[in-house]
Length: 366
Image (cartoon, rainbow, N blue to C red; front, side, top):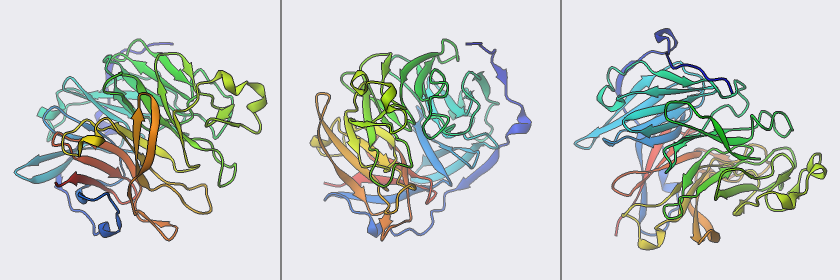
């Protein structure tokens, strides 16, 4: 693929706002059901909050999908401030932090903000390190994260609901070096991965995948997958879940030739952010469990999702899948929609919610 030299993003395309104090709206948190000993609070007010990343100094960076902003949240003496560090970007949903630098996805571009934690009130101009990704905005909000190999992994969703268009460019997970070079495809057949993380012990990539729409309320299931190596194909657009050939395209491929998901979610729950729990706050049985934010259904007569699921593993097999937090959906109406999950140094979970425009903190008190 053609490579582009890094360059400075024009200042006119973004602007810095002074920091603001987070003011959370009143939300019915008493409706959220959690296991005994756990509690939930509103940690910060961040409109359109999507993916999150943690800086070396404890700064929480937050991307957005439609607001075009990137936020940084700092805390001193128990007081939090929300800084707008970039504005007027195109779908800057994905954020990742590595070696003092913040990386932000913006459809076809990946931007980097160097030394960002030392310049939150006057951020440096971001550099565009690559424009190698597709310009199409259908599934154009890209989740990004650094792997144990120090490569930046980038999700590239399909350019359609279901189609065979440019499968070497879409419906995949790619990776690049921190300077934007060495683009390579890591996994294919992935319709729309909005979250991934690496197993703390095996270092294998685990990721969510949101399946296609318009097959009715009960098909197809959404997926949780893992990739033990580069080059694996997970079936889209020909096969969905463990045993659902696509009604139009499934006859073109043998579904047994693709990698099956580790487990299925209910159809249309839209699994998004995913994190292995490696903190010390929760009881020991939560160690190395997976937490998944289910963003919730729009393509279903009776809504599902809008919750956080806990997945326990036995090796690479799913031993148990159960609801950890629910209550954002009441009487088929949702007042909140979890997007991403972040483990902070004290072991609590932060959960972004783009519908309510907040970030929650879920903690455990013995």
